[in-house]
Amino acid sequence: MLLLMLLLSLPLLLLLIIWTMLPNFGRRHSCLEFARWPYAHRGLWDMEQRIPENSLPAFQRAVEHNYGIELDVHLTADGRLVVFHDHTLLRMCRMKKIIEKMTYEELEQLTLLDTDCRIPLLSEVLSLVNGQVPLLIEMKLSGMNLALCPALAELLSDYKGEYMVESFQPFGLRWFRKHRPEVIRGQLSDRYDASEPAALPLKILSTQLLLNCVSRPDFIAYNYNHYGSLGSILNARVFKTPFWVWTVRNEQAYHRCSCRFTGIIFEKMLPDQHKER
Image (cartoon, rainbow, N blue to C red; front, side, top):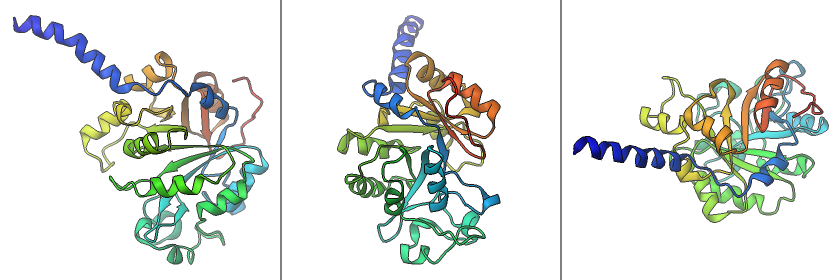
């Protein structure tokens, strides 16, 4: 009897697992419109030209080359939205402080690496880009604090250009799903190593895209080097979920990914936008 119950429960368990991985199927066409551009990772930065990542010159250069722009957004201690990748200022500003714990007044005194560029406000980036190319905006959320989401939604409500939002944190995407359902949202994921601070069960859930049941994303953005988990294969090949990959850094990988995935986020190269996709 126990064996029979186990055999009967296995299909139900499989269906439950598949259900947790499902995306939102209703926005595929809209996502494909965004895939007409390759996306410059943190802008089209180049330190040989003294243009650091996530800087206004990097975004200006991406616009000039007609590339879409991927960028990262944090909420400061005084409620301002700034464009910066890391949670700490150590790598880019040589300062052992957490960006969310600083005010914008403090941050605007800093420069990025050994340049004159500073940490920009998202509003400055929106003014610069002004709808010329699409934006892929990653929400950098700290734990379960979702205060960034309404602040971002309010700022973007007046922006006339095209944009999508994405995050590793599914509850931030769920906030947009509930409060701004018209905004296209993407679930970021990767295969996490031991150095990542998250608990092992959470890493597994994220890697396998089992948290799609929370975010119900319109697209997936995945580390192409780690593509191959059951969740990523089901989404890319079976569910036909629009699938962006990051971060591509050479022509060979770019060509390979162009043939397999919907969209590409690149850096340290100038991809040919007219290749067959």
